[in-house]
Length: 245
Image 1 (cartoon, rainbow, N blue to C red):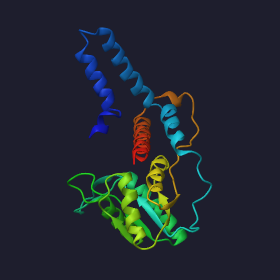
Image 2: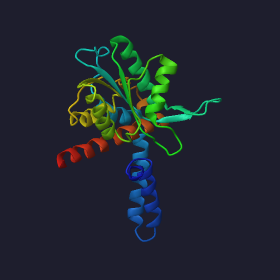
Image 3: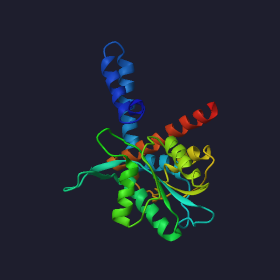
Image 4: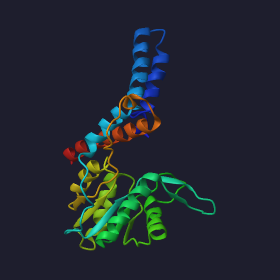
């Protein structure tokens, strides 16, 4: 709830609203707030800025899929929930979650490692993401899920609950599947659980910029910037939380 007003577009709308409220008493401040909101909205909507924000999170893409090595399982982090397909009573996994499931399925076939999915409810009217992920793995990829966590609501809880489930079966080393932009925060959460997590990221935003297209605003770039800012704020919060523990 709070992060909706810490991140775009919420924080930009708040700035615009504040500018409107103080426009008569503080006209200079109002103009500064309005122009700042417009300028930041434009910058975040450009591939130049979204690519820089994501690139700083993701690092360099690996040359190949990770090998099983000493890993004993694959952990797949849930994300979003999608809409309902006609004829189906339950919603589907969302686009981000489906990408993670598909990447995990590919690694599972290559390594033969068992799968753990983790994700709780994102809205009161939807099933837990973990359950939907397990159903997608079985229905769409023909793969069973050995462990299901359907209660975790954050990446922090994903790590804690996955560790509890795996340690009960003697698993201490895993391959961790999530988007490249989300991987740094996920690894930080898993590091404190005692699990040894080897990253298996995907979907790197490493396409070369094309000028002047890199300065043209678009909804895709704005969404990517918002995802990146969410991760940066999350990483700062996790670092503070770890320091205080």
